[in-house]
Amino acid sequence: MNRAITRFLIVVALGILWCGAAGARTFLFFPFDESFSEGALDWVGEGIAESLTGQLAGLGIGAAGRDARLDLVERNDLPPSARLSRGTMIRVAQSSGADMLVLGRCGGTEEDLQISLRILDVASLKLGGVITAGGPVAVLPQLENELVWRILVHTGLDAGFTRASVAARTRKIPNSAWAGYIRSFYAPSEKEQMRLLGEAIDCNADFPAAHFQLGRLYYQNRQWPQAVSHLLKATGDGLPRWRRDFWLGNSFLQSGRLEEAIRMLAPAAFLLQHPPALNNLGITCLRIGEDTAASYAFAFAHAHSPGDPTIGANLALMRSIRGDSRGALAALDAAIPGYPESGMLHFVRGFLLRASGDAGRAADAFERAQALGVSLERLESSDPRGWTRPMLQEHPGERVRVPPK
Image (tube, rainbow, N blue to C red; front, side):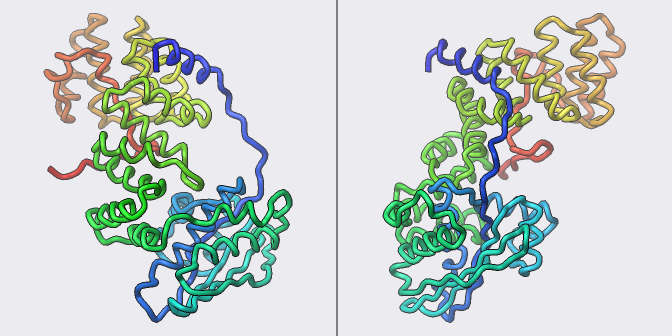
């Protein structure tokens, strides 16, 4: 992407205002209850829910994927891997804003799999009739697709669809790869999770969801080139696109691929007004010399997350670079009381105080920063533009873990 296109993207992004589309009917799936005598089918209950979610999403119908469901469960102070009672699932659905909660069961044998589900209208708590499908596990993709069609008919959403158009959404990933992908969710270790995902991709290279999960693991371990390689292939129905773009943009940023980072970060930054994406877009713009765009990005990030110490320090640095030392110090003085243990805030404050001729207070700030683990010599020997710090987790206050050495 050349410089003109980069500038165009920045200008367009700065002009975007948040606007919410009218809410459509949305579905929330939990893993189907299982009753199997064969351990080899331990993936089927979650696998059905995941497949139905993806197929509905591919038809343009709102369906919360697994990541969204886990976020909802955690926000309700529940363990994400726990099997929930019907009452608890209803409570989670009510807190989510979903319109329809799908409750399902599956059981039988590999040669005679039986699946049933019911749909609960979350607002009225009216429970619909039983929808069923059955057959050997070998034809599970076709059984899942039949359930998708019956869900549409049952809820009156089939208008505008033909049976053939819905059939085209049948899961293409074979059961062998799909089973490994689903089992990776419950792997006892990260190493085992990566192995299962790698094998699923080897079985079926065109597997965006597996690339998404593997890219996530590499991202969490700060292995940026590997994260980029998999996240670029993580495009498809039912995947949280903004989260994928956020991780990919940050991986590009950390790899020095700045123009590609802007392209990935700008939508989440300005469409969603997402503080970490705004912060990281500001850093990227600053590093390519787009100071005005960087200033706007940091200001918007601060407006949406005024107490965050990373954003506060970056905003102060930006103001200092643009010659506004007074505004920079004001930003730091507002941020430090809420985060007195942030060494970077104290360091930047010391730098600004020293530049303004206040050597005494600067020395105190540097001493405080050093006590909090900041390497004064390393930072002072580098370009202040490089002092800005990215936010690698999508929720402010969280951190991507650093792998053990």
